[in-house]
Length: 402
Image 1 (tube, rainbow, N blue to C red):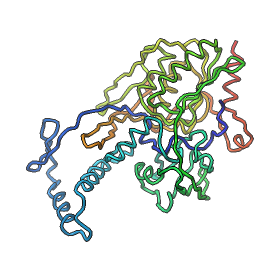
Image 2 (cartoon, one colour; image 1 turned 30 degrees about the horizontal axis):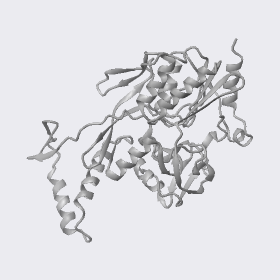
Image 3 (cartoon, rainbow, N blue to C red; image 1 turned 60 degrees about the vertical axis):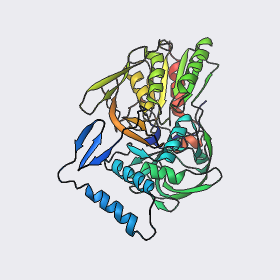
Image 4 (tube, one colour; image 1 turned 90 degrees about the vertical axis):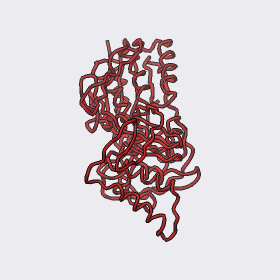
């Protein structure tokens, strides 16, 4: 159950931190917006446009494209989706995205835990696409890609300023096809080309075992639709076997559904607050678990690293704040914003950042991430020597408790 692939290899078929990491996944009915004399009508009220904004320009450009473009006429639906995409891009938030119907369908499929790609979670750092977290046995691992890699080129496309969604579209593809990533490892200036053969990626979100020494090891790879159900199976098995300690390995887990993270945390803290959502006006909304703390009496160590993001950081931060677990590893990614998802009648969708997350003690997850109680690195040399100092330290703690 150890993760010999640790340090730097990819996770989840390229849905991107902006896709997976911790969605508050709220579904809403479509709202209708029309233009009328310079005003936007929506949600039952008129929203006035600023005096210095001439919305007639939009229609002027629309007509010019339709009437004068060399290869026109252009599909009106394509123009609409592109305009909406640009509108959403204007807020400057990499986690707020508009999806056309095809992209929205892929997004939904991703959250079900099966997709075609390279087996890598990606994010944006310093205006570049980076690899965040790996999936065990993925094509990306086999090709030599690592967590923390900076991606400079996707095939021949420069990633500078590239959005998550564009990167996902370029990296994804049918199984058997090849995508070439030009990357640098661990901040090293030298770049290398990594050809990766895409494949069908299926995510097993939870795996577990109880060792002969009585320590249970639970790997949580992703918080998707079946994670809470599978984790419940793990808890029942662990308790039935009388485990004396528990390692929860969430290294390179990029997140997923918020409610699954809250449910799982309740297995240690009962019905206490797991996380606060900080709204635009500063108002704090507590999200409480409904569990019965079945694991509350079992000494627990949580393993995290730079690929641990979003919902993973919520679980680790809450267990750390309530002092029911020791967190070991490396600083987490720092993705602490909340996205709600609104689906429209034509199959398109909008993923909108609506809040930020704070741990039960009020610590911000966004950008800062979670600092482990014990910082232990997992180096390339450790990987090549097939040793795992983070996991070994967890076992040491749990087998020396009196």
